[in-house]
Image 1 (cartoon, one colour):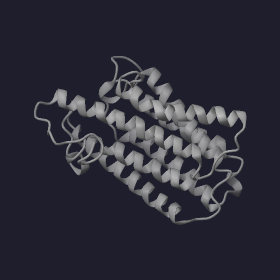
Image 2: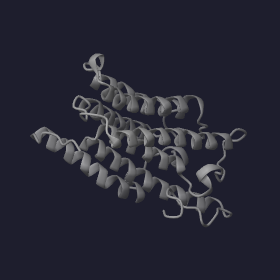
Image 3: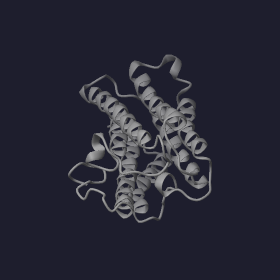
Image 4: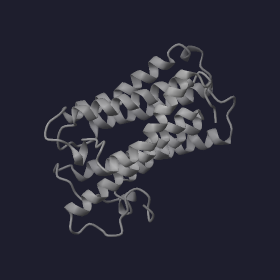
Length: 247
């Protein structure tokens, strides 16, 4: 783990990230910081394709601006860390534009809030990448493996969701893949992706970003499970939220 130099500025930043990581799960679960998109969308807001494009493209720009001065002479490890962030968000941009099927707008505040956090995360990881781990080790290789599994699994389950809505924008009980066990396998693979990014970076800030994403997506998946159970009387009773057989 790479820890920062504990200046006043870094202490404030890391305290802020820690508060976000600890508080986002309960805030989302109890509805105090609800993100209004997808099933929980509002009646008005930003056109969904535009909103999702903005919130996933902004982090790409943030990552570039944080790393642009060292990229011309970047090491292999620096390129892998930088590339993992950019590829992740580029995939989400392409999915938002060409894959996802939308039923309604994205809340304007939600768009700004998510874009701001992801951009902050991408910028911090890109900035701290000036001091990468000294050499490729076993955990770096595990990180690459988890990243690849996360990216692939996330896309696969997004494709399953999109295929369910080919002929109708109504919601259906998802099926196929890990949807047979949990309602949000795409969230699970998102967490796997960010676990990979953390293992590639190894900075404390990347761990706090990962913990934020774990907390948020876990709480969101629990709310999504309740939404399905309330909406569909024939919803499978044994289906979990995000972890098969467990949660």
